[in-house]
Length: 340
Image 1 (cartoon, rainbow, N blue to C red):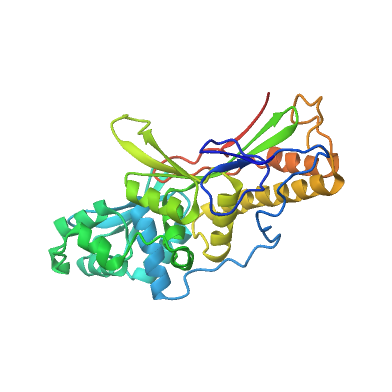
Image 2 (tube, rainbow, N blue to C red):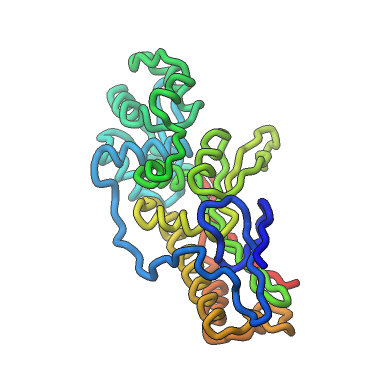
């Protein structure tokens, strides 16, 4: 019997109905097979060649996304916070914009533009594409030469920036840029007596609740609030992909709209974990066996060794996957394993 539970992080295999924001939990029937095996289209085992924005319009979409995530605008300069080591991305931004310089501070890179003409080019490139009210207010406050005299509400309406039409979302590079600035890919496994639970989450937090709910409206998933870990004075809106149907949609997007920062490597490992989970579950159905034996008490005592051991070996050997966040040091993979 297939049951649904609203938002919670517990994932069961990857057989979930596409487009829902709820976690659907698969149950074994009397023959120990999964009851809903055709709900999600499998992903390809082959990665596309990595590519960059193909024209100015695509670059403007990407630039607006990363500005919404990690950009700042002041009176005499503007820029972006990037992860340390993302020199290739900073160089690409300078190449497209034609202005800018790079500063390295602690564990971050800052891409700055202080030339007045460069600032004008930068803002005109993102205008109509960015979705942050804070960025809009900073433009109005500091850069009157753009003649930005409409209200934020009119800007939202005129450019339809929060349209949740899925085709428009998939065809834009805004989400790729935003993810390069803020996203984290995380992986967790947990063994229970009759099943292996897999947590594959895409997570992002932002000061703008509108942006977070826009992402949820396009992809599914769930949203929640979180206090700033340093001061507890700022409340962030956060998004979590929560289930495998949403992870499938995210993979489908990033297969065609590529990340340009080091997070692309994180995504490839995250995608590989999904792919292996897909193969393991297919084998489970085909061989008509339980994924975990009833005597299992740890991650290493599994039945179906031929394929599950490959999955668990992958989990054990890929601690290099990072949950990177702008302005913070790069930490080891968000990977957890436990038994109950």
